[in-house]
Length: 103
Image 1 (cartoon, rainbow, N blue to C red):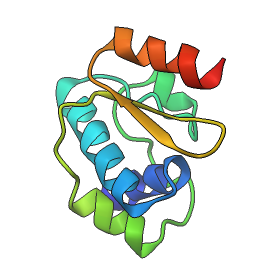
Image 2 (image 1 turned 180 degrees about the horizontal axis):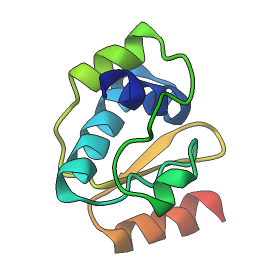
Image 3 (image 1 turned 60 degrees about the vertical axis):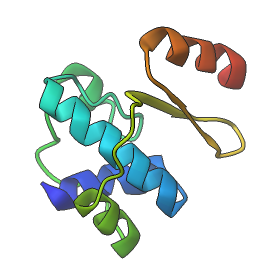
């Protein structure tokens, strides 16, 4: 599970701190029974839980983030065109971030 999660983080976030925050969000979604909904593996929009296998070869930073996620009040994140991550606590905040950073 850790390596699979790390592979998702490897594809989703660039910076170590971002990977830790994203890890906390994704582990939280798993506990809630919510689909992970990560762009690097579109199947995570359709199915709940982790993919069956890693989607890439994660590095040590991503593995560390998967093992030691950062707890936050966030439930959503997105990466803008410049590679910066933006976080949201609610779906409405997330939709506003989409409008602000991706439209």
